[in-house]
Amino acid sequence: MAGRWLVLGKDGRLTAYARTRAGLLRWTETRPGGPDWTGPDFFPVPDLTHLSVAQGADTYVHFVGRREVPKGDGPPAVDIVHALQYQTGRPVTEWRSLGNPHKDRERAVRFGVPVAAVSASGRVHVFARNAGRGLMLRREGPTGKWEPWQDLKGSKVHDGLAAVAHASGRIEVLAGGEQDVMWWRQAEADGDFRQEPNIPLRVAPGTASALETAPDRASYYWADPDSGGLVAHRPGGWVIPSAAHRPGTRSRCCVRCSTGTTARCWPTGTWTGRSCSPRAAWRTSRPACGGRRPASTASAPRRSPSTRTAGSCSP
Image (cartoon, rainbow, N blue to C red; front, side, top):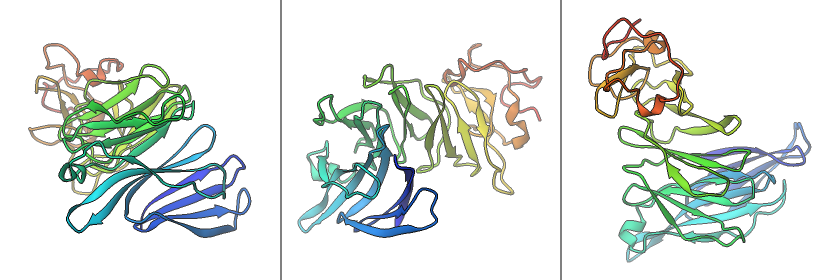
């Protein structure tokens, strides 16, 4: 069994969900605040390899899964499926296939793990990595009919996407890559997605999550693949280590600019020089990218510059 979620219904009761290879398990509070629960109720979804759970402003719970059906004559058939629960404790609807943008089964089997977000208007948005390691989107149209798969581009996208729906109705999504973080957002609710400049940091695959922490502003959280520490980042701001690094590890503390030189001393990122203490996380080095800041920190407040040169970290 893998994957667990907890949501709050309109009636104040909590519901817990867990995925198994055979389907979905559900536990429901008998009254708000507990302590008693019913369940588990089982909803069969054979060959379900992954599941994403998203709740809309109307409190409807949406389930988006990746299904991998074995075939005796070659690769399994992979598609994305969707179901819905309207109220706490009520049945789950029929699971409907959203298909796969790849018609060739060799490529279709490499289609990635979906993540879902629901706009304020109730339109479900499904994101997943494609076989070429770009980002794909499929979403409900204004009438409820599903639109075709859309290629949002991107490069070397990893599974483990993080999506967030703001109270304003806008949605944004973050994807880790080989050396950079990629993110897309809407300029307006239910509008088109625009890819923003990459953030020169790395994400341990499968660890990213997102929350709206200010009006129309998302904060992302993930594990640093080098130190193992938990990192918090709001695009346009500073990277903040939120939990201790593993004992005995050192932080890779300088993040490269688009030119490949170093410009910031942070506890994560791409750094080809020596390591330094996490204590250096709050100081900056002098800009080393032609006098410009990295794109991901262009709007960040200025901090006192370090007296050391770029590529070293002040304690």
